[in-house]
Amino acid sequence: MSDVTSTAEAIIRFLEAVEPMKSHTRSAWTAAGKPESVAAHSWRLCMLAIAVAPNLHGVDTARLLRMCLVHDLGEAIHGDVPAPEQSPDNDRYATEQATVTELAALLSGEAGEQMIDLWKDYSDGKSPEAVVAKALDKIETIAQHNQGANPDGFDYRFNLEYGRNIPLSSALIRELRERVDRKTAELADRADRAAESSGRAGRGDR
Image (cartoon, rainbow, N blue to C red; front, side, top):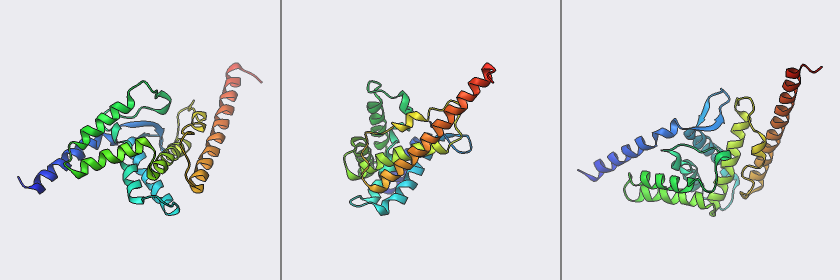
């Protein structure tokens, strides 16, 4: 078997292994009222990174985009755990690390090593690219929650504190976060008013 043949087979196996990311859903809803997939989130995060990157300094744009693509690779097998359900003792990091290692092993040599390197870099959150990717990840998530056709009782206020520990490394990223936060606060207030009005109607208040 030639090197090209074996490499092609490895790539196809990897491609098949990450396909479930198209079906694994997150806690977000699209504007059309459909559950958002992990793959869709990663795609729009990359779109956000492309739009932001020309305004950044000291950031490797190509590495940033690759990082955004693989940042949720650990969810390819077991899916996403919504932020409100995450806890330090649920072994989420170890589970995702094992998944990334397993998927990277399907690729030979440099390609697999790059996958692991990018995922670990993002998880550590220390490099310039990882700092930006983590901030944009939260901004994209919140923006989707703001835009989505969410079910009744959706907890918008959770997002006002979501990812507050992540540094915002540029004026543009800070402005983006402020804008999605303002929209979140508006939606939270609107939801509170709707719930209060519904409660009064249910009690027959006049």
